[in-house]
Image 1 (cartoon, rainbow, N blue to C red):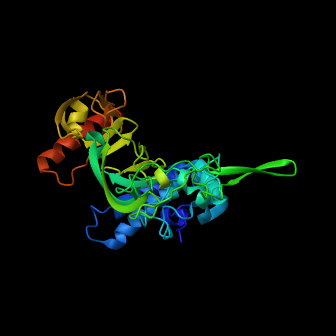
Image 2: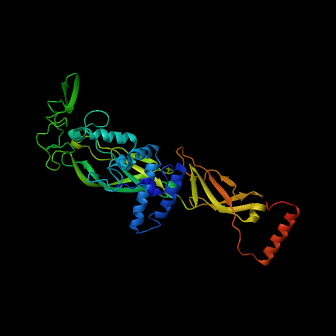
Length: 372
């Protein structure tokens, strides 16, 4: 059974998008595999948190869950995916990653239609394209900055290598069915209505195979372990979806393969906060530097050190802008980096330091003004 995404994230049903994102960031940091090496329980929690966020961050999916509950994503991205899911947990069709169009399409298939036109399902598997597949991967903000390559391992239907996916013994395309002309359906009239039904001669495949392939029994597909190398582009945003055309499951009887989708999650960084293509980093600056001005050394996300000038009189909480040191953008440029000024108060002072501060405080008090 799918777990209630609101309970997984610990938020109320009327939680705002900001509340949901805040809860997600907190939990994903807590259960991240890098922080819990070898902990299977934390790994499962991490998956649950990602699946829950996948539903609640999308208005359409959230609305579907609020209305239909687990049924909105039955057979998909959950532990109840079932035997028909070639990936097991975390994969299977669009599953938890489905939009409303995909949910409607699956519902139509359940009634014997392929998508929104023609007959499909079990009666017309021969002309139905292969299933789309979905995986969710998690990368660090640093990987998102540089771009990376991710290896996906899974099993799915592929075109039979003996018959080239045609389902025939000689490997050649099967001739069109003589009764339906290759369309896969025949017309009949019932009163005032014209009805299309799957062709009884070819069972809706549109082709007539006289001698089936011995390896795939005429289906044109076989189940195999697969590996895909997925290139994650630099600057990718959290929640982005990548599409690999034709890398989904092979269609039966020579039909086109589906697509493979990758949902990308970018974990929050412990130093840099991302705001679009900009980065925000908090830096402790000595009081003397804030008051008198000076330079501070700041490390960028690509591990380079910058010397940044702090103007005299800079206030705590203000931000200094460094152009072009943020995340890569789609136009080939970079966002900016903002240095948020912080100050740590020393816990131990020498007698000389104390005396200097007391003299400073006395001088400021006589002028009836604050520290800054």
